[in-house]
Image (cartoon, rainbow over all chains, first blue to last red; front, side):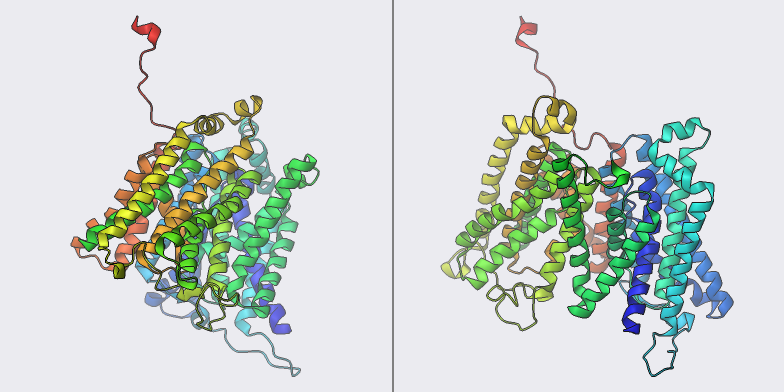
Length: 299
Length: 309
């Protein structure tokens, strides 16, 4: 039971951290930043690639992790600047942003595949956090899992607090509501959008490193990893960060329960089937009952 | 000869699916990411009927058409209820869900797929020995099957052309260009979008059935999201709102990796280069014509009768 709960918590917190990254862009710009998935899975490969010439000392690993996270932020910033900013200037609809982001996702993940091969990678050997805790006669989760939980929790809490207590959170909300008015007040929507993309990239890369310190991530798994996070964002009313965390944790629990009850291969059909049901029921309800069922953020 | 026929078949299959997608993307302005799901539905329906029920190619194709009609409302329901980015993500989620179902609907027993609920799709191993449209045992030459596929595609093209040239086609384009105006004229825009999504799904499923008949094998990879992107790139490359554009785009996209072969690039690298090329084409088109992607190419107007006098 302890092992199951730890596994669900790890998965839920990883979804929460990635969902937070995805929501940073989606809630402020309505852009589906799918390319985030490729940045997410590339980060651990970059850490391993950097560790090879530097060696596996603590300092080298820390430097490689920092470099990979910064590279993730930089890539996201670049994708936002070169891809979406240009489309925003040309007044492209959200569907075009989605397709463009998907194209960037495929380019990044295929380039990563050419660089590192179609393989899966765990950073556990590099991080050297494998010993299992013992005590009380119960089976305890491995130290690497506890470290991943702690790292994801730290990322989620730090980002949430930063958004709540700095001016950035309210500015991002203003960007979503009325970018023209925001520009008239002296803030730059372009800089804010860039900040949202950069922060999302940093967070996604950091989450991947945290998760990969315990589990394996495949170079092809970007979209698969992003889907539950995007599901959590779509199921939550816009701007409700706490609900987003609750939803992500619930999804983590549901997915692990599905793995336990049937098999891991049922995780995605269940999650996305649930998303489809909720989306269709919500929109059908809105049409029928004139918005009575609409979440508060969308009325 | 066989190699050339194989390429022709691939272009026909991809062209039909891309043309179907262009009804949704080009004529209605809705980005549909579930074309691979419809493609897989048609391919699996043909394979079930051909393998589990031992039907001939023609009968299995007719059955696949019936299955396509039954499957289309699922995609139409998404178009009826969801709009814009939710529709895009909804169709993507639908695609991934169907892929998961096809992948998981097996107990690994190895019994004939489609005959029992426990081993419906045979999971990742897929369904083999799917009958072609014409059995070689009956004395049919390889080109007979390609010719039959071409006839099926031609019939569907004529039907699609007639539908798009009809008042319904004009209504779809009017909804795409100005949904508010169409709404003010009393048109049911969601219902029309749903019909367009159903037509898209039907053509995608028929393309899937032809794919299964040609390759003789289907597995869950036919429902992968990559395939939806492949069809989208083909549709956009030729111009999604033109009739012949998706077919021309399909020809380019199918022949592109063949052009890379003489350069000595390995098959793994070819696969990656192919995906990167599609994605670059898609990206370039989206940036060059973000508003105009869905629009028809400008037509030269004939001078009005009054002007000629």
